Length: 329
Ligand code: SF4
Image 1 (cartoon, rainbow, N blue to C red):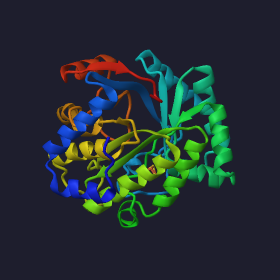
Image 2: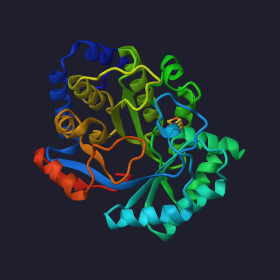
Image 3: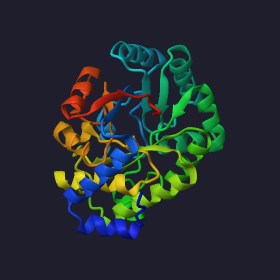
């Protein structure tokens, strides 16, 4: 398997055609995962609070009435999701300093130990601030959350990890260095997860490669990223520069990620963000997983796959064999 340097990757990004990269990436995907299998998982996203002091330019949370879900509300949502076939819950919220540590421990514990869900949750920015608010070192916090039943963390909130782009998109959020530190600590604590990139603002080709390289270096140290997900910004707010990402650019990005991440086994395509037509094409450009059946998503308007039957049909229609996986692969 060829390992591309960041410099070579930049050259490919600037000069290769999307079709060339897609063909190479598909070969690599077949080498790693075989010709047929495409995986998916079924979980429910629970946005436990929409209160957040960070105010990222692209976040639509601030446009909704503030709330914190009670344990009772969370249990009832989770049980409804179980009826629809979910075996995992994904907690996603804001940086809400009014929430005590016990709240997090209770919701994880109840869902994992009593209701037998796998629990994934909390972006690096949430974890960073929970640790700070509770004056508890991050490794200690992670052990507590793990003991309560947390099994993995999403690498959410990375967007584009260069200081210039972070100033534009989310100046109050974690720096790239802090984001990576949190992810490294999670991996050390035995909490694996994913990483992503979000393009479609004013990022440069150099910044895209810098971001990918940053993730690859952390993965060389920890091996904790199980998957990588290329995303595109959705036009939810008018507070930051957004550009149209053409289909060929998205497919090229998926392919480049497959080729660049010799050390990350899975590339997920976001059917939720990109729609079914591009989602299908991405499966021939390096992606081997369609992420998840989305049973609820308050952060963005859903155009994803909403049932197990729909996921299986989508994968079969694309010419592959559906394989249901667990939330941690
Ligand atoms: S994206 Fe996350 S960190 Fe940023 S404002 Fe929204 S909830 Fe807060």
